[in-house]
Amino acid sequence: MKKKYFKNKFNSKLEINEKKFLLPMLTPTSKGTKYWEPSPEGGKLTKRYFGRVLLQLHQILGLLYSLNIETKNKKFLDIGTGNALIPQLFLNYTNISSAIGVDPYEENEHVSSWQPNKTSENLKQIINFINKNSDKKNFFFKKYKKFINLENFSFIPPDIKLKKNNKKKEFKKIKIDAHKLGLLNEKFDIIYCKAIEHIPNWELVFKNINKVSKNGSVLYFKHRSFFSYLGAHRFSSIGIPWGHVLLNDKEYKKFTKKFYSSRSKEMNNFFFKGLAYPRYSVSDMCEIALKNNFYPIYVSSEKPRYFKKILNFTKSINNFWPNIRKNYPRVSSSEILSGMYHIVFKKI
Image (cartoon, rainbow, N blue to C red; front, top):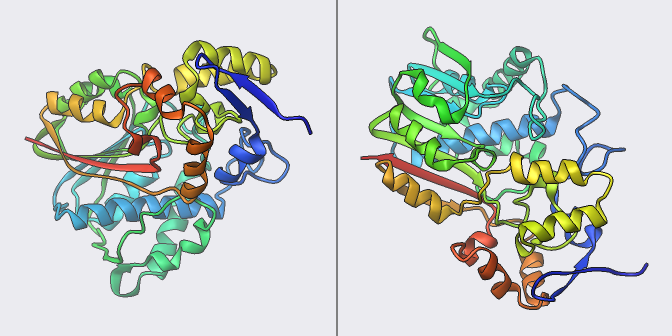
């Protein structure tokens, strides 16, 4: 099969090969679907999704525990909550007083949100699993790791003691945009967000987070950087290593029109509207946070399971680093090579 190439402004001859540069790094999709298509299983609670929720909950609890952040009688806010499983589980397994989940969309209304429906039934299944597999109230990673063996992660949280909450639970899900959080007219102690890369205008987001927090409040982002290898997500990823970063905006539109003509409109729509635009780096995030009285107390990036392979790609592409620095001068090499970030801020 003849190789395909695309030349960018550096006259770099970039090879296009999805089988080599993209598919091995993505988690597999359901049989019979393309890598960018939603699962035909629809609203079914799959084992993989089940494992993702457990890992997400465990990572939050484990990180708060390791940072000695107290949850007793605290108020919890989940920004971009989707089906709101996380705040409800957080209520069940910590001694917080209340939890609110906010999202501008209903379940599965946004292209990046493929979640099982029947949330109340799913919640019961997950709670039953945790209760049955927690020895002396300890939450064990080994009990659910079989569900996520195809996932890309390296942050394995420690076994922790669960604080089961048997009191009356105060939970609400509110349909509201992250840019309008100030309308909640409430202050939260622990604020969590897993979707900041899908939210534009971080300046306004942090300004509103500032309004709903107080001195000592903790803000935790689980964040896949746009500049990382899979930062364009599967909806706008292309068959060039870091193609979404090596090409400028004009080149990206030209490329999708030529090589992905049947879905270029959808790809461009997600690339410029479904992902935060203009592009923000982790350094930008920290600077914006500081302007809003939040300082970083923890920053780490999970090493991608495909790290060695993509490191070799950087060596095989001519002008790789000059190209990136020209397009995005504020982005560090560590962010380019990053996996999922875990960033925790504290308000002063």
